[in-house]
View: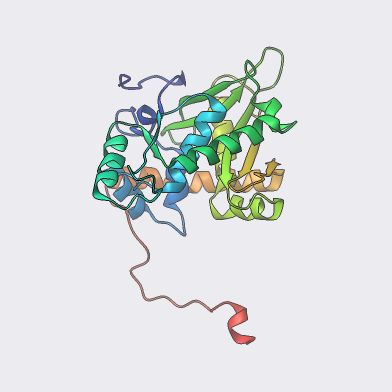
Length: 283
């Protein structure tokens, strides 16, 4: 395990080291800030800090896909039943899956590994996405730690791909898997999952390394999980970027309030009323 992080800068950490939060007293990350705000709540963050996030097949596929594209990440381990049945419904297989997780590896069914490999190949074959991740053009999975100037809070970000070539402006590339990679669905995901907050947060991280904020570019690469694994590349527009900055500020203030007070509220304790969707009254 890497020693505690006490100074800002660019670090080469494993995924487990980054998510263990090596900053004494804790640090704010984009995923944490996004889960502080509705439709989530601070209570969710408090619970996950104490118990971790439960494993999901979608997370395993995403980890495998990232490793195959970026060349970094946990060991991928195919788990199969002795009779060749792909189902993980025997006690022996369930125990093996748990042992794989405890060893810090990613358990996969053989079909899931093939799926991740096909997705990674789609990225390599794509004329624009493939060029973004070309060997020698960037640093994979680098962690940045910095101090927020306004609040003094410790902050962190793990960047999928950071291109900081001499003489060129820095480019952040974020790799995401999705069942629906169309532009319309990508735009919906940007709002549903708060990705519009992730963009300015990561720009702040790279800015802390000595780059001008306005020179930093951020490109999302959404890759379909189903054949033919179509790809949409997306760049946030200016107004949405500014909204992300605003929401990050609100979430960071809430993070500081919760960590200092030790109080992590859930939803409102009051009885609430809100009009139902309009379609309810049109049928």
